[in-house]
Image (cartoon, rainbow over all chains, first blue to last red; front, side, top):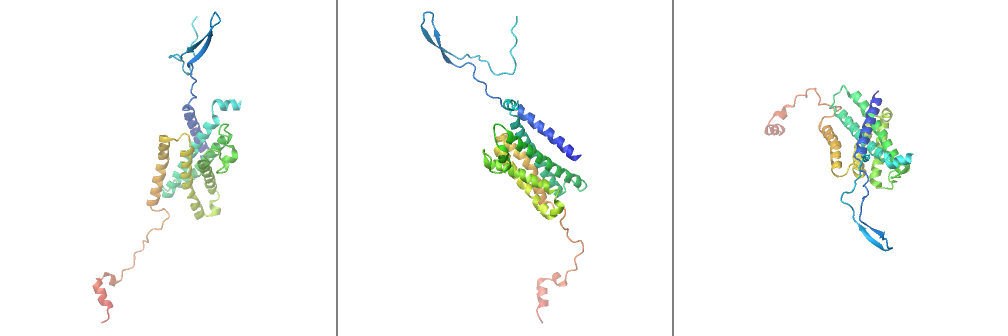
Length: 72
Length: 211
């Protein structure tokens, strides 16, 4: 009976520590969504322009919450 | 499917860490129980029950060590393999602290088995062998603090303090307190001292000097 209690106790302790470790696990860093870059834009008359695109300040961030469905 | 699951959530890595922490905690509690038994701090009546728990916790701790090693051997990132987990010095990563952990595991197995061969090997060798539990605790703590990724910096110090303080206190109590099996002073009254010792040294000298 003592062995049974020891096994139960150890198993619960293992699961408790496992849960804490899984909960506090650092998530992988999210990739930067909008970074500055250059884009080649073709004009109407055939000319091409190099346009530098800046990263927007209000970038999206990693979240576990899903986006709301658009209304309408 | 197993590969996909392990890459999404590192199950084996988390299991290895959790089992290692629980194994060391069980080893510490078993050591504390053994010290409490030897000093009889918990009383004489419950000695048999506590000895049983002492033995059971050592086996349970060793089972956790087996789980710890198996999870590490099967971990797809660490890629230790069973030889590196069983043989000290064969680990491809931080060989010395990992070897300390392997040595701790083998000592724990020897201590757990020693309970079952106690009558065969005799009480005195069994007690001497039991001193290896201090080595297992020290080497295991070294292993935990050096390769345990959960025990870095402040957390490691707190963990070491929580685990070591009761053990150190019990060791000091064991050293300072009289041993339960130690022989007491004889209760038979000492024979009356010879009269010469009651005399003043000068008088004694006078008696010794021939007239």
